[in-house]
Image (cartoon, rainbow, N blue to C red; front, side):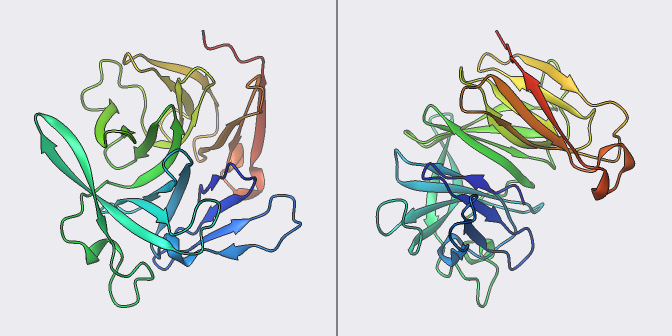
Length: 256
């Protein structure tokens, strides 16, 4: 599904079905893709690479899905082996903290990956994920939440919740991309077909909207390396069919 880029120039393609795998792909087509079974067998959605802590974070698109961490056996970029872990949220001194529990069988030969660890915490339909400034931002679509996981102290917070937000305009939370200054852009799958900006102080602002594409979803938001252009797609366009997909470019983005 969404997958995610690596700092070493490859793309991790996530398969969104029960026995889904992650394939490491060369966008330039110079090397063959390689399956990375150590990253787990489950309904993969998106992945983000944390080079500072030498690990990867992965989301799972299921109503009773989980949040995962993969710690490679050898330094990145080697993804051939390592330990897959699953998040268990505990409350300590009034704060939510993630404890990472090992998954016994990442290949899920006999039992679904998440069900191997009874103490795992459910994240309701994991979607996009991105890392910025030591924090992993990810979305869950069935409760319309945007989460912040602090990779240093393992604390977990909610950046946006449609049920409690003073400005609940964001629904159908999906793909995530971060601006150069750290603002979080969330693309809607449905909703009002908007890209919405979230800031650390709790501000919620619409950035743009696609009109007349009610049967589509906004996918793949990404900046060019200079952060002067924003790209995104309407997956099915105004036709509501895959053949109608459109990719857009927004120039000279200014979110100040």
